[in-house]
Image (tube, rainbow, N blue to C red):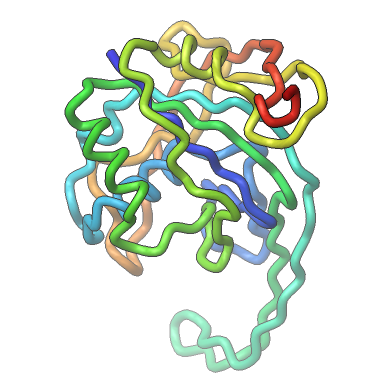
Length: 219
């Protein structure tokens, strides 16, 4: 098995799993459904495409910087209501993570990971961090570790944000015996526009490691 490393860093990120209601909270770290959508976009797959090969990848997230939770309040005028009840003004409260940084690992066979590595370096569709308009501030592709499994790759990689010394960080990895149940497992096909998504549950294991600073900071 090999591991593809993806860095998700930007001014704003929002990783939602619920319906589009007035209050739209973000999850504290990238969701598997969101990451799979990003990969599918990089490959150029249209909505409705099969993503079984992507959902089969084992995923892990290292929280190099959790960011700050912010709220974006918006109003929209003349929103069409259901069942012909006319128009009304709507309010939404959308939360997002400011200045967060995550290292994502995807474990799988070498050949498909090499294809994904190429796609991330020249994505077909413009990538965004969970929500349109939330663009990455650094290249998504961090590297392809051909000889390392998921845990080894996440534990050996330096921090993706500037740091003067090593730091304790949280790691979340797919694990059938994991103690956390996360409601963000993507369906087998990308949802068409205007149709509800089908999201399942996956088991996740959480632990901590000490990540070392970047070579630039220690030189």
